[in-house]
Length: 120
Image (tube, rainbow, N blue to C red; front, side, top):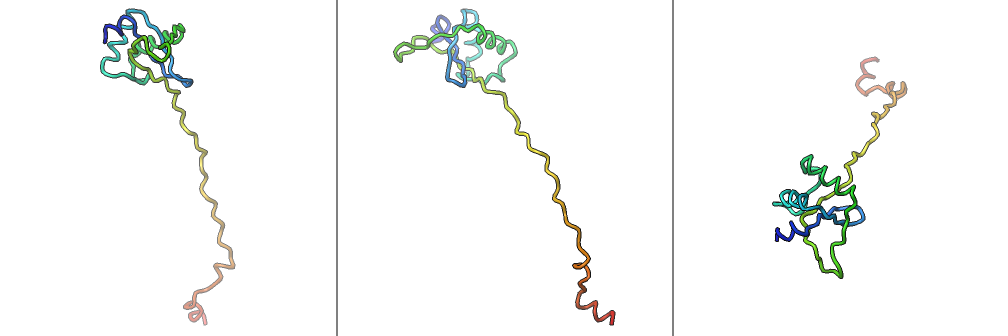
């Protein structure tokens, strides 16, 4: 199987509009087969810097190919790169502490029952 991948393999790139396939050259396919030796799918952040540069170069060169004709795949897929959108943190507004109303004089003037007897 890896001989077919080396000879004619394509790389699947996960995009927001669906999977796209790029056709790397022979040396790039050999590197990618080594990269995907244990996993079929990898998120882009876990790749080494040189592997990320390779993926970015393949993406920018627009060497996209069709994977199949009439639903039958004619090229083996070496692996799949998950290109997720960068994570954006949710920004929450700073909450202010609740404002407490001051105690009015009318509520503090109410004496407890035991205090009335002491003042008389």
